Image (cartoon, rainbow, N blue to C red; front, side, top):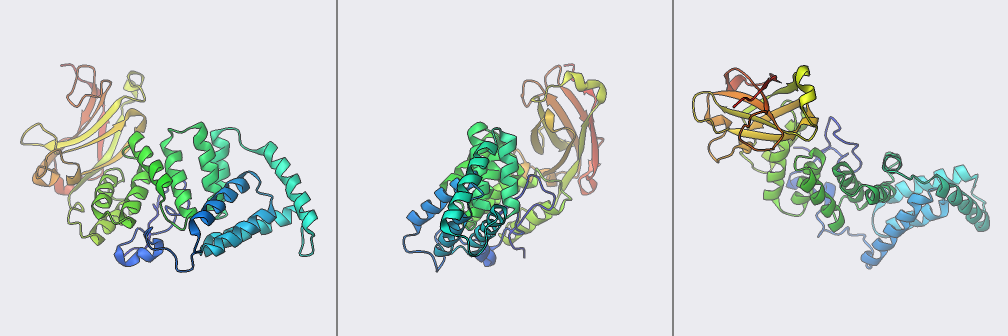
Length: 370
């Protein structure tokens, strides 16, 4: 059994939730208790206190030199029963104090003056673009300052509100800052990321985690099955997800997987736009032309490592495992239509046994002429 899960090959900078190892079965939910399971040491007025902590963390994201502020945040987290976040805030306070030249006998006025001076300097150095806020967030997360990281990602989202990577990273940081609880804002960011990029690996991973901890096991299964179609079949990450599905009692963790890599012939590169639709599919070598499994991506994703399995079947019961031999193909479509159109670009494999259909090489090298 596995504790919480992080992708072994980072698909994005993993912060807290995504950065832990494990996406548990029920016996591991103590790693990240469901929202209904409040910590036994939580403050009786946790909601207003939590809001105050969030506001203070957001302010400290722009004034990281405020040692007194970090100490107050640490005390607040301890009152809320969040020892991990309290320890991170105390570490930030020590770092700020060292930079400001404070020591154990510093007066309150000296501390305040130092904090104000640092804040003024920080105001001038605050990021002004998405890349700057992303760097800020990653730096905060590296120091386990997840609340500050979440605030920095939120600032980045004001500049790029439709970026799926930022949405997933922001949800990850926010959950980490809240003792690995996905609040409505984190869930909304994940939903938005998946609306804009339905196969976003990190968003699928985190949304499945959130669903499981919210008690929706069926949604967790559905999201992780989709994730299996994104991850390379032989990757450690795919094995972790398959193990999670087995822990959920999912007999659909695919036994038959067709995998490989799709590349575009160099001589056709000028005929392709980044947003052209890429279809990767498998069909029975002897049977109907209807695909047994389909994966949809963008031309910008090429070259693409892919895996196809029964969870991607167009009709239940008619997946890859129903055929002994398959042909695997890839097609680029300007129109985005599922049926091949003149001018589309395509390539395919020779017939291959499903029991040995791994590490296939598919080269898109010809135009559809009719």
